Every structure is written in structure tokens, then in C-alpha cells.
Image (cartoon, rainbow, N blue to C red; front, side, top):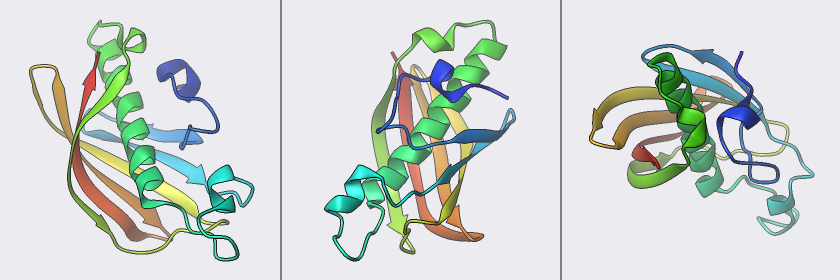
Amino acid sequence: MIDVEQAIPHRPPFLFIDRMLEITDAGAVAERAIRAEEPHFEGHYPGNPLMPGVLLCEATFQTAAVYLVEKMSGAGEDGAEKTPVLARIEQAKFKQMVRPGDTLRIEVKFRETMGRFHFLEGKVLVGGKAAVTLSFALALL
């Protein structure tokens, strides 16, 4: 399967996917184990660590970026030379808390491309239940 660090420029501690599980024409699925030693848990919140919602969204954007790079590579373009940039977030809904020890299943589905903007839908699942759902657009510049 694809090497995440070869596909996108993100690196720890700001890389929020561990591995890609599946990439198809319609979308992609990634996985991330949430570890107690992650630096954001020191302040969010001490004694009651919760994964920040913005980082759950970021995991979705990174999964989408890997998907788009792979999709472009399959079409003969060099997506790995592009930098994924978030262009829009819509309808983000936070449905359950994520804590250390949880494993995320991150799903993205492609909707359409308009010019240089790629529109997708994302979902982060914990234990088979939605933790976050959102729509968003990325540009690869």
C-alpha cells in the first residue's frame, strides 16, 4: 500500500494518519491509533484528555490528500510534487469524544473536481460510530 510520508508533506507530530487501508476510485480509508503521549493531550484537557476536533478534521484532510495524490498518479500526473491546501470546510459535526486508546477509521469520498478544487466528504469513526462528519475542499498547489 502507499507510503503516507511519500505521498504528503506532513510529518510527526502533525501527521494524523498511521496507514492507508484502502484507496479506490470513489475514495479512501485510513487508520490512526490515538496515543496518550501525543503533545496536544498535555493541554487538551489535563486529567481528561480529549482529541481536539480540529485534529480529527485534519486527519480527514490528510487522508483526502493521500487519496488525491494517488488518484493523480494513476492519471499520469505527479501529485507527490503538490502541496495539499485546505480551501473549504462545511457542515462539520462532532458526534462523540475521542480519547487516548481509541482507533480511528477515517473515510473520505470523492464528490467532484471544479478547476483546481477537489470536493470531498469525510467521516471519522470510532468503534463503528461516527465521531465527526464533514464536507470539505482541497486544492493541490
